[in-house]
Length: 322
Image (cartoon, rainbow, N blue to C red; front, side, top):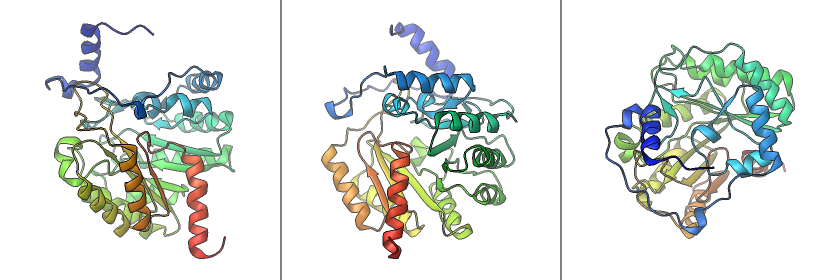
């Protein structure tokens, strides 16, 4: 693939992220060897891409520039991003387009369900952009997608990665939980002290409370949340987030390295070493999480199917029924 000239690349970035256009460029440090991935070339990757294109579906894999897209798509695993590809928020770490979204597509739930069936997914992850323009934040659309997948692929397990429903009433969360996904995921993304610069449109304790309420509504539902490191946090801040998650009865925590999408995005403070990730993993298990994924390339839905199987087994072991 031919790289765009700097002037064209800058123009594309301004169109994609108008809220970041005025920001000075942030230097992008060279990636260490442990963060490098191969370009996607496999037939499995191409087959997955074709199925997604045929069904006119967006994926967070592409929109957020996930480094694992080649590996995941080669195995037929893709994280569907519903409700369009334009987000109403402008988080400084995120590469998803910011702007005014289009109306919801009533046929999207059926297309998602068809793609899940065609890909033969045993575990599917559904995420979305933030839709602060909708009264329910898109909760009913999430529920429709869950029901459509259940109808077409009753044997598949479903994981949702939702927005925070910050500007909605409490019934928005209830709508999603009542649709009975197998895993409810909502990412805290970073430590609370970095929210004003990293996630300015969100509120840390609101997101934490959202996860806690899921357990109150359905104690049997698995909950999951994740953060990025390398944004400027310190170890003590990460350990405090772990404690906060456990106080909210979160079952599964993910920790991955932040990678800067463009020079206009939040800078990479540092690259956290694999040894440090191992330390975070050990600490998280020690605090009582049923499942922890902490590696430089960990993302919310990376190896989600295998992780869900381990999560379920860990609960059974804890209950003494394995």
